[in-house]
Amino acid sequence: MTDEELESLRRDGLREVATIGAGHAATAMSQLTNRRIMISVPQVRRIAYAEVPGMLSGLGGHVAVVSMRMLGDLTGRALLVFGEHDAVRLCDLILRRDPGAMRALGELEQSGLKEVGNIVCSAYLTALSNFMGMMLLPSVPALTMGLTEAAVSATVDPAEDGADLVFCVDTAFRADGAEVPLTGAFLLMPDQASIRAILEAIRLD
Image 1 (spheres, rainbow, N blue to C red):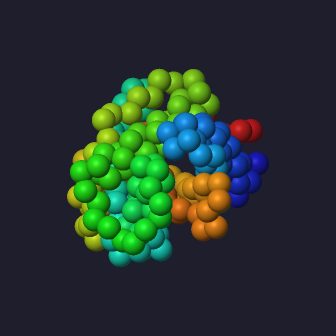
Image 2 (spheres, rainbow, N blue to C red; image 1 turned 90 degrees about the horizontal axis):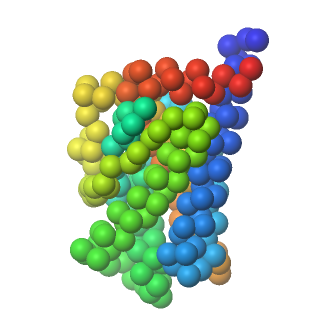
């Protein structure tokens, strides 16, 4: 098997895991909002940490980052990132408010974003845990808001975690009746030992 074929299988394996996680997250989000929520996974990518700010720039200049530590048999960090505009729209959805003008993300909204981060990150980690037959546990979520590069840098210290390889899952939320989906990104940043374990597990040959 060539390196290119193996890489293609790994991408397919990661996408399968991410799609299962998105399905679990959509079910939980539907229960939270009392509306049918669909979460799709348009793309799964492996990128270097240095590429993260540029990749997230498509979400806008200001972002909301929900971060969690990944604990258990694999360690690292998991992030759920939304642009500021979509973060506000998401808060309107989970707080069951009519979509309105741009508003500040106050204490209630911040709590709601952390709950969404907890739901989505936990669903993805559970899917990965089941796929690998390992125990993975998320920590309590934290929220950071600000300019894209600064918000990500404040959340993750690559020197501490050795996060030189990042698994990026494009994540699109669509609620019943909404014409425009909410777009964000789920980032899994394993430490070096965990990166090796994940890549070996996703050798589907």
